[in-house]
Figure (tube, rainbow, N blue to C red):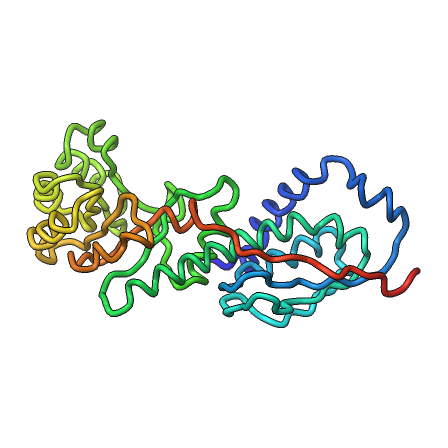
Length: 287
């Protein structure tokens, strides 16, 4: 998974779309009170304990609006932050600081919330062999940033998009005529370097997937007892993944089953934001 800023071309395109969404023609509020250039500064303040993530994206919003914007960071992505902590100071054209505020905070709060939620979930898996994965249940046009946040929080990325890996789910299996047929078709179509993952809902499907030569078997919406039985049946012949409504509240139920991976859409679709704010804006000099 690429850092959104090292993947700058894609990131900039998405950030520009977000800015266009928020400023379709002009920032009429800012232009009304600040029609001319005025240098100023503002502080980024943490209002809630958590993991900070997305600072390069936050900063890029202001840089796209005005390359002369300067930011001094006092923390870096992945750091634990505390309520009331000063995280950064921004200086530049006050009009830019005002116009970029919401878009920049939307990115930073969302990404920090995902990183915080991921870190809390990873902690619940400590002492087990099970690794945490995200899913494709991401916000449209936010996947690049949200999957990066999962990595910052200590989780792992599942496939990035539909071009990134083979995952045969129930509807693929239905379209192909069965587990065996789906795996055979995927094996014939895909390069040999591609792993084939199959989603199964019961032990019979699990047995079919193993016999068909699936590389990874996803145990979907099974109980802990069913998963343990499936892992025993697979017996190391394929990697195992647990999926289906996995949250921080129930994730410990899957550890005893001995699966290799657990994937959770909740990391990205249900993580609350981390509360952050730009405060104490003041002019520093007038041009």
